[in-house]
Image (tube, rainbow, N blue to C red; front, side, top):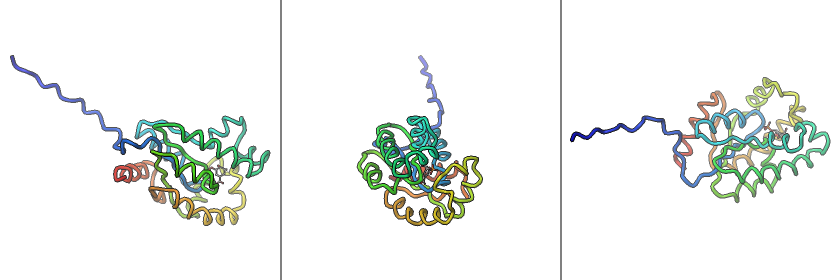
Length: 191
Ligand code: S3P
C-alpha cells in the first residue's frame, strides 16, 4: 500500500533562545523603550510581559508620581526593590525595569544573582531619550524628568551601571521597536 507523507505544518518558529533562559530584563534610561520593546519582544517570543512600574502602581493603588510625593524617592526605591524581587520569580517573562532601578545595589545584586536571567540594556543618547519622553503622553508625570539638567546628570551617572549589569546592549536610536526586537533576538541566539 502506498504511504502518504504528511508534510509538517509550516508554523513559524517563534524564537530560538538558549533553553536555560527563563526571563529577559530590559533596562535603560527613561524613554529607552523598555515597555514598548518589552511588549513586542514578549509577543515575538510568546512570553509574558511584566512592567515593574505597573506592578508597583497596581500593588500600591497609586501612580508612580504619587508614590514619589508620598514616600520620597527613597521610599519609592524600597517598594521598587520588592517589586523587582517578585518580578524575578516569573518565568518565560520579559520584564521592563524602571529607569532608576540599577542605581540601587540591592537591585543590581538581585539581577546578577538570579539564574537564567538575561539583562539587556536599551541604549540611546540623552537628547534622543529626552525628546522621546517629551513626545509621550505621560511626559509630565515622570518625577525624575522634571529638571532636564538634573536628568542629564543622572543619565551620565547611570550609564556605567546599565552597562555593568547588562549581558547584551542594543542601541535603539533611529530604530523602530520591531528592529530593536530583531537585534535583541539576534544577540540572544549568540548567547
Ligand atoms: C524613573 C523611571 C521611571 C519610574 C520612575 C523613576 C527613574 O520608569 O520608575 O519615574 O528614576 O529613571 P521608566 O524608565 O519606565 O520611565
